[in-house]
Amino acid sequence: MCSVDKRLGWIEPAHPWLSVRQQCQLLALNRSSVYYTPRPKIFSDAQLMLLRLVDEIYTKYPFFGTRQMSDYILLHHHLCKRHETRWAYEQLSLHSVAPGPHTSKPHPEHKIYPYLLKDVEIVRPCQVFSTDITYIRLRCGFVYLVAIIDWYSRFVLDWQLSVTMEADFCIETLSRVLTQTRCDIFNTDQGSQFTSKGFTDVLTAHSINISMDGKGRWVDNVFVERLWRSVKYECVYLQQWENVVAVRKALRAYFQFYNYERPHQSLNGVTPSHIHEQILH
Image (cartoon, rainbow, N blue to C red; front, side, top):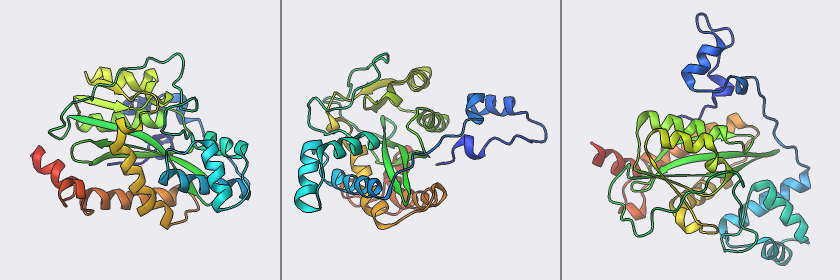
């Protein structure tokens, strides 16, 4: 499992025998992205406080829309106007899981695939993989985390951090997973990163069936939602990180714990690795 961003560490401009172009070809990486430096957003202290508060409340109550969120903050914390929670939801790419006019919309030019998992019995590892993006807070901002999980074993196959919401880091993570293993069906939500041609082309090139959640149907991807809740309450909310290097180190340790040490009640008290590796071998 790897969390290294190729742009940040895998390309060596002064490699002794491989040019930058050759390295990019080997990594299936667009050469222009090597020279691109993403810039994280800068927030004021007041904005960071609001983002962190909305982050915690939303993780606990994902059915809150912006009106309920502002009312909840006003009731339990401090004055908060609705336009402020709208701003926070936009920055964190949040939407209420309840169907309605504020659910997230896919890119209008991207193809949307049907949901394939209704009434499908999940009986083995590598039958269904799923992915999603969440936000991880730093002392002075946020980074974004993508992870890919096996539905049957709950095993986290790979993950990666990014300072932007562009699709590249999702495509890179997917490509790494599919060099090691594959599945019958890959399920995502309708976010623009997952409906992008770059992402879906990787799946179709491996003859994997693509499944996408319905609008407002968070339950269609419930295993990833449960993973995010565990990550937030068991790791993120217990620590405060200064930079991406620190959060990457902490998440690497947490996912090692999650996969190989943490017993899961839904798995009859054993670890994801126990189910994933025992049945595969």
